[in-house]
Length: 370
Image (cartoon, rainbow, N blue to C red; front, side, top):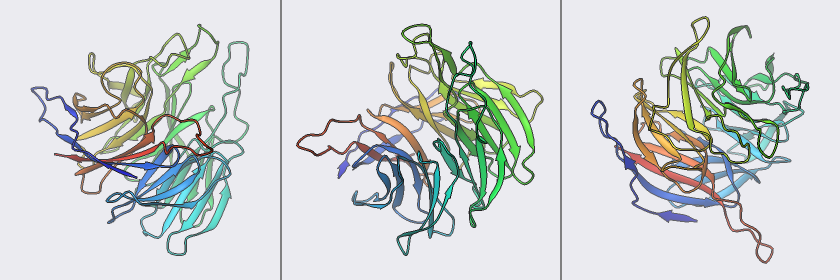
């Protein structure tokens, strides 16, 4: 199903920034919620990791086809540079390699005994990183139990060989490669970030921010939140973190829409910037994408209170350039190769079945940027 629209985003143009126009071109529906998205190079095709498998979707007419399934939700999908191979990861802890021409899975690896929260490919297509972990109380202060398996695993994208098994504190909910593919970073529930050298597996940075983690003192006593998305800056010198600011009620989801930027190469890492005062509402932010030009980045997620659930921010000034209220929970985003298009995905609620059938609630949207 495809829904065409000419709806335009709210554009903010501070005196120091050029105005940015964001216009919605189309809205497409998929049978179930979308948790991750990947672009097919030189094509109008995207791949969507959904609750019931991985789909291919044509952005022009919305036609779609399910390519493969996991034993549970498909959480992430990556399109390798050869244009012939997909790799997906799921809540079954498995990575699957899929041949697009033959339409068949030709390799699978049991990466984790628990969920793969997020899997990403390096920009050169050489490496895959997958993060896992379950939050279990490890003491009377409810601090996380130590990992039962390595929380981050690094694979050769071409062969499926395990290169490094990297230690962290679970659950690790986000992972990202540097633009030059030399470093990989991962962030967890407790706001701890670790960075490793891809070639050697050596840990080269580690720090903790308390800005994204909440301790619930109303309704339930537990930790909630964490770093849900990571992205390296265009030059790779900084790391952007996204999630939600602290709150007292874990069930409310009304923490501040928050990103923070750190210079990770300094010892210790230094907070350089964060969501500017007066430029955010409330809600959990779950996706980050850096524009190919390096001039701005997108952060998106859920809307709990305020006017937007996705916004574009200037690099490196950090000011908000434009914002969107998509009306659905945004879980993934990617810019087109030329930078003129933005593709977002997510879930528009989760309807109850009627007459044994589900109303499609997965969403993929395309925007034009000018």
